[in-house]
Length: 293
Image (cartoon, rainbow, N blue to C red; front, side, top):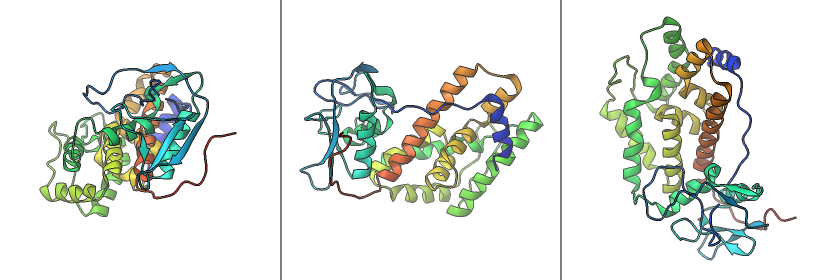
């Protein structure tokens, strides 16, 4: 699988590995989430001058939670809540985002921090069931379920690269999804929707927040499940989600820097979302301060 796509992608180059970046005000409120929200608590601030030296994590007073400290001050979310992570693994990931900042803090690329903010503040006040319903909407318009009728070379590429993933999820979850060249897409059986709804319901609120984020990045429930279940890698998931675009680039060329930036940013967001899902399911304790010389 993916041999044709990898060869195709090799013609247009590879994105460089991204730096991790990130925060907000002296009150230590965290940056704007990358998830689209409308809330009086959030303002659009993309960068600011770095205002701290040391980053550490500590065990919070609330049982099992971990806090992020910039110098001696505790971080807060954009909504004004104390920033807490449910386990050490996620706290370390967030602390690393803050610790790797240089002179300028770039909020727009702090994906792990952003997802934590979204889970903590829940600025759109959604329940788990509402998040699941929103995520499953993408199954009705799933990227890999829409097929072209021409040109033959693209038809063949879609069949070769998308069918194995589609077959994997249908067999693994015992569901029927299918594909279609109709603009309305395939008709998803209710039994399939029920199976996926039950599966999504097994995730906790934090993990579900991350999984929905991955689905929105890839515009595909199928690819998101395959990624979270470790059936495919981040690189594969992103290339499969951009299959037609990569095909067109392979034929007609591209503006190299623009292609690389788009690809690099999508990889970074998708990888962060996948890590967030896994870290949100972890359980651990803190025994030391981090990022101190």
